[in-house]
Length: 334
Ligand SMILES: [Zn+2]
Image (cartoon, rainbow, N blue to C red; front, side):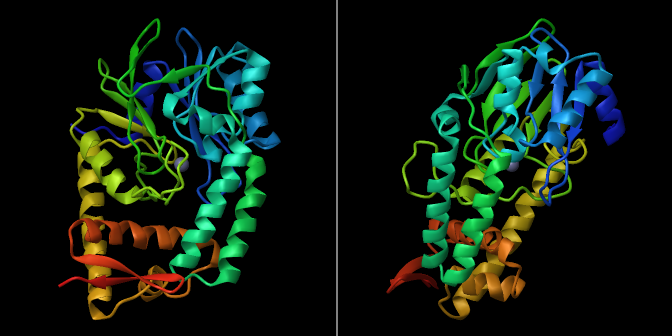
């Protein structure tokens, strides 16, 4: 019998996992952080770096009889600022350890510098794929203006893929599931069959596999969608009773959700192929043919979608990239 999302939250609470919904200034709305009432007392994700987020986190902790100062461990699920912005403040006030994927530790420690390099790559990528200069530069300044909601983080407990974290009442296995971001890490309670997956899986929105620099710091871009599909296939095989997400409601049938997402990407891939087979096009031209003239703030998102699906086609040998001056076009090989 499938649980309702409400029942899943009740079961999680009985297992000492409490969802704290923390406000963000972003379109995605509130972020779900999880308080683990165990030893050590643990917070999974922190919310963004804002007074409002800190205030709400404090009062939601207080409702359960805790203060920021009581926290002993903070676990970060991935590198995005809506999930980790308060980590430095919390770690300083509580002395809590900070656990995150070890591969991401250097990146998290150099947040400002790293975000700058990330934005530079994004601009280069946008220009190469035919996005007009003024759009690319406008997006760069939007991204810069968001940076204040993030924070650097000193990871004191680096995690390896497959590592088991022992608590008084449970074991959590940390599993690296890159795609939505290169550092996505999910936490698996095998005894209770509860999966804490953050943005790896979200019920009401398809997690956007944004093009990003890999964690090793090289400037070669990742094949974010290809990686994400591999990660989803692994998660599909897990016997989870329910999945706790980084946004929105718990997922009570992750197999159906993943099958649905895989089918959607397959359909979108064929749509992209059709456009490329008609005539060679830049990523921007494909995005425009698919979605029309989107808002400036959506330009990188839609380009990431197009490149993600074009990567799948390139890997299948059906499409190739052809450089033409400063831009790259996709053309069909057949
Ligand atoms: Zn995210």
